[in-house]
Length: 113
Image (cartoon, rainbow, N blue to C red; front, side):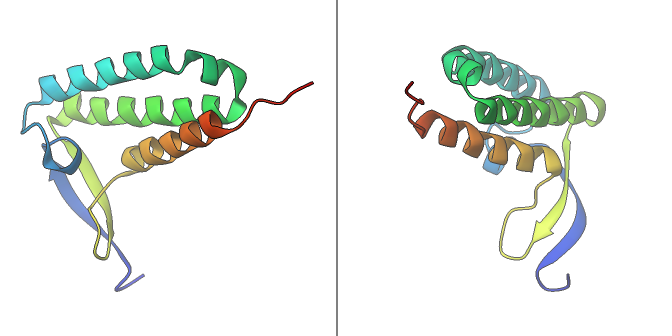
């Protein structure tokens, strides 16, 4: 879609929004720590909500995909380039959508019987 969405090869050595420099080992360790912490903090929400389960799966899958890129290449390959926005990849999109699902599930009131 010319003018709205382009595809480009963009090797990204940094973390989200350019944070944490170009240290793949640090970024992998941070991703593992965040996944473990998120899983621990949200364990009740994830157990109780299929939406949160899907959301956590998307977050975990996206994080693992980005970690894999960092292990193999030393950087993440970003390739989706919407106009006037950051270049990102499918793993990044999964993390963002997954977090939105988790937040929506956490904000829902539990069903009463």
